[in-house]
Length: 205
Image (cartoon, rainbow, N blue to C red; front, side, top):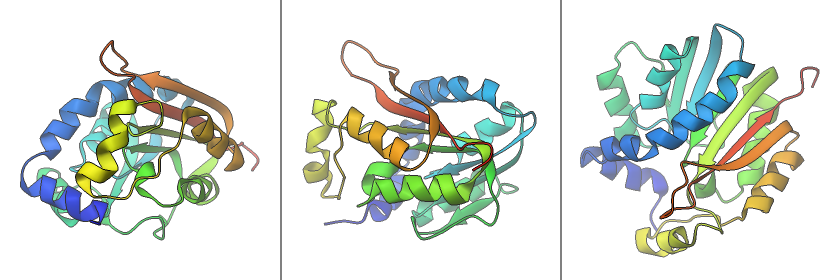
């Protein structure tokens, strides 16, 4: 079985990161629109599984003045650094890596289900990545109710943890998040959309 980071490095070399950006743009816009009014201005943010850094660069257009990205795929980080030489990008293996500071916003798109224990990562984000009162917004396209996605682990030969909508909601609750919102963004008649999760670390946690 392949490591997901190796697959994404290969995709970066093949230029498929641009297609990923285009394919996820509508869902990410919807996710960020759902959280942006809750954030201070300016705000700090980090993107987990940042790929070529397109969401990191988007943060700055939304009022962020302190942005970072992290990814375990070497070629993705190299591409991000080439596109955005002044950006702050980290090549690191997750969930072990932890940022040196906490953020107002943590964003993640198409990352969590590649982990063997997404619940653990959500707890780490809540406890170690977010400032008091900070927000997580995360999206996954591989989930139980998205039937077409269920063959991805075998077709890509990559580990994926398959969870349903209620399981993801319970994982957010068990990680300690409050003001949780779960919805399917960028849905259409041909797709159930991206399962999107929004949650806040309590201001006094």
